[in-house]
Every structure is written in structure tokens, then in C-alpha cells.
Amino acid sequence: MPFDYTLDFHTVDFRQHPELYRVGRGEQGVLLVQPYKGEILPHWRFKDAAVAQESSEAIYALFEAYLKAHDFVGADMARKFIQMGFTRARRYANHKGGKKYAGPVPDDKKGQSGAHGRAELPRTTHPDADKVEAAAIFKRKWDEAKANPEYLRQKEAFIEKYGK
Image 1: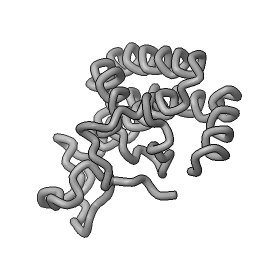
Image 2: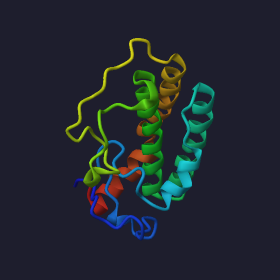
Image 3: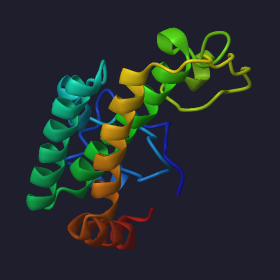
């Protein structure tokens, strides 16, 4: 099932209502789903390789803690933040200032990933090496999270119980 952007994200506590959560694709909902956004976001940084290392380790520790608590939604949100560390660091490496698309995000698409009909801005000819390394650090942690046997077991059980 697709990620449900029609929910009232200001009031829904997904720890209390995991049945409302959808795994979705990629990073869908990463900046919406509470209380996890509030717990994970303070650790999410990708300014340079050193910061990315510290951030990815802190978020991965949360990922493991959520798994240990059998909180799949929390673990999946941590995985999404790690994935977003990779994608955002790559964006800033490839696009000076991190702006990938021309124009503002349409009001009805805020909080959703994608171009939404906007053209991609030109990439820099010389990617920022520190951001490239920051992205690589997050990519390794993302790969580790996606392959974690306990994460895969809990994901399968969650999908079986609630749907994708």
C-alpha cells in the first residue's frame, strides 16, 4: 500500500497506532511520522564526513534499540533517516547549496519526495569531496540496516500483519 499522506500527522502517535504506518517506498513519511521524527531528527547531520560518521552511528544505535524493543516502525524510520543522510549528502555534493529542483515545492506536495513536475537544476562539475564521503558513510550504514536479519524479520511480520 502507498504511504498515506492524508493522515493528520500532527496528532497521530505512530507508536500507539502502528497499524496506520506504511513502509512505503524509500524515505516516504520520514519527516512526518511522530514520535520517531522527534527522536531521530536531532541526531541527523551530514555536513561533512566526521559529522556523518557520528550521526550515522547514533541513528543506527537507535535503529538497533527500536529492533530490540520490537518497534518496527521506529526501526524503519531510523532506516529512512539513514537513507536520507545518504541522499541529502549526495544532493549537496552534486548541487551547490543542495537545491536540486527549480522552483518551490507545490503546497499540496510538501513533505513528499520528488520533482513534482519541476526541472532538475544542473549538477556541479566538481562534486564536494567531503559530502561525497559523508554520503558513502551513510550508504554503508543504510546497506547494513537493510540487510539486518532482525529488521528483515520484523519487516516481514509487520507487512503480514498490517500490509506494506
